[in-house]
Length: 318
Image 1 (cartoon, rainbow, N blue to C red):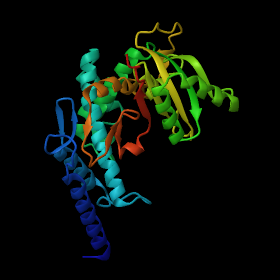
Image 2: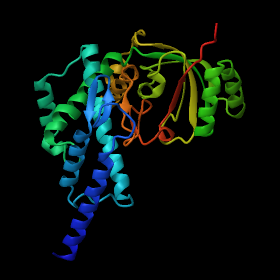
Image 3: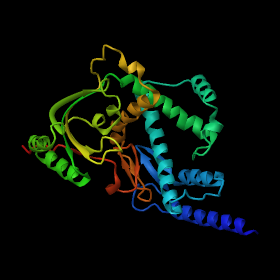
Image 4: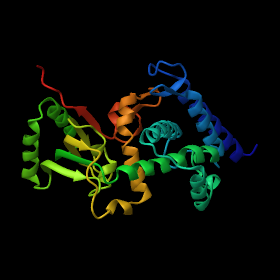
């Protein structure tokens, strides 16, 4: 056995052992033994995540070599979370499509995949095999596009907001507003003293006006919810908002701007429309993988690593 082969064999063996450790435990999470997550009454088994992770490693040209600069275990952890994220999204998408009465025909699915190069080619480098890419990932994206198309010009929110300097300040102040909504006016006033554009009360935004914003947490939570999140990955500061009203049947825009939205934006809106369903189903994730994060509609490594924060306004006691 050459030095190169021994190196590859050892690297693959170590990754395999790490994967086994990652996938073995259930911790104190979902009650059903052997579950990676529970979505309503649907159990996503550990062996499904294990099988897809193992298959992904088998298909890597370097036998599962980690990306440059990333530790093997860190890459495995992230890949496992991504696998579980897409599987949870799949379960949510099927339920939402049924609820919203949208569908994608087999002919449409086959035609679009063929135009894009085929499921075999599109699945290369991903943790999906060709069949799973077709029947889950591609179908889910098309269903999310149709859900997004249905609501693209019907969503509207009314809210107060201000910008915070960092994550901790945003979360601390969001909690204060949830306990006492009158605090919001004070925080908005303070923020506007530093920057006139850093806050506003009774702001109103429709999805047709700002489709990218409609893909965020702001459009996914019910009224009387306080949220904190970064408006975009590029921005270091966070926005804190008290959502006062949320509509899903607002009057469509007269200019038909929503008809020009890209499939990616429509799918993003569709994915955000799954948030209410995910809250209803009380998704439980095995602590081995992390926690469900509605902010990004995915699995986060821990509570402290969620992409956003949300809390219901506390109603005064009678």
